[in-house]
Image 1 (cartoon, rainbow, N blue to C red):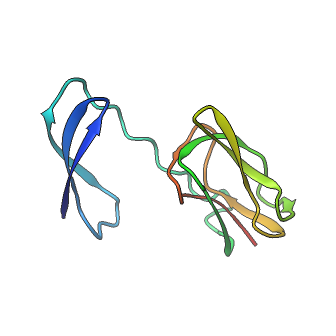
Image 2 (cartoon, rainbow, N blue to C red):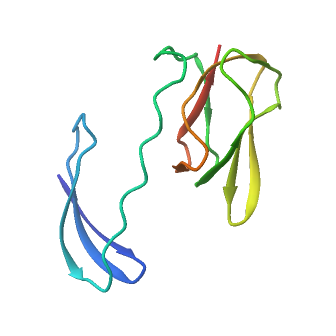
Length: 125
């Protein structure tokens, strides 16, 4: 387990993270200096839309942001450079493009999802 101190909107929280937990559980200790109640964590990314089958080419977020629009559908053919997902970060729309030609195997996010840099957005075959 690792202990972290995190500040959110001016409130300081001590957080304990268990390593190797398959459920991704996070346990938070009592706030160190609460000023406001913490908000709920963003919902996890949706399961792959293709019935759990994912492609071998990953499309990942280059920056943290919010999913603004999903441009491609599962089964759609895309060419290198085609926008698959559009993220919104700091009031800018950032297209996340296909790294090579292929067919969309899964879309792993939905409009409105918050994603971190490096998060898996979609896969191609």
